[in-house]
Image (cartoon, rainbow, N blue to C red; front, side, top):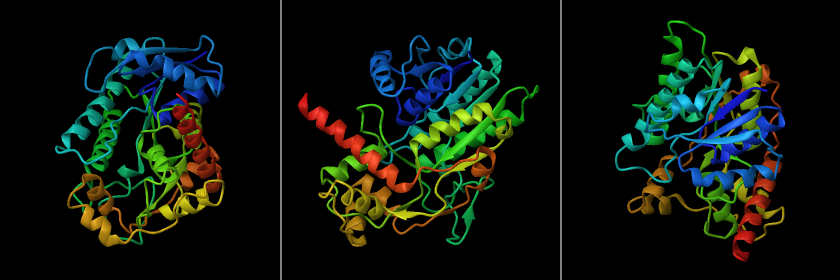
Length: 342
């Protein structure tokens, strides 16, 4: 039985990856910054699969060298999922860029030394589609974000710089025996396995459900279901045709955030607003709020994507948008209900 190291094991995407790996007969070692979260991860996974003795944990930090080589011991593959995701713009962009880049290189260096066959890196479409002034361009796996372009946030820079560092590492190996596949998700939606719904996407749905969002900003997004992302990570391990490639895992067309609201409103969540917030309110609030400042940069941006390589290599059939949103709404509502009981 091959063992897979999954970094950032308590995260939204990582939990689904661990579950999918266990379902596919792999054993898993999950890394945590704080070991006291082990019970939370085990509880989350138990709702999907019985881990038995096939799940263990280790302590790792993106900003520290300690433990990386030991974490790789006995593993065949690595899913490097961990990466900082700020809720608001940091005062210093290096707060996000440095751990993303250094954590990626720590993972690759340790994997190389340990004789790991393949690393699957969770990047983002943030490394593909930003900093360009062509609204008609359809981006694909060959494109890179221009980090010096307009509207490029520290998070977007961090994902671009980290992924480029990964490819530089792989392409400059003396002995090219470590393979790399990169998964580039867009805005990740879908049910949460844990009761931690403070992440960006789950928090968005929570705020819809509890009416903390009184009106929907004119923001568009490309999306992907978290369950699809997990399956694609596992398929990347199995599929040698994915070696040395990056995969845009996303809807090709952008959807307005109000479509999420309408889907929720029409499928069991009638209190979710369908009103649209005027742009001037966002622009005014951006003077006082870093969160609104970030939101302002995304107003009316529609991104065209090309996910054809992902479909061709993996035979990917994306989960339909409506199912993703309904399942996510139900998941977040159930979590909020359980928390109120405690």
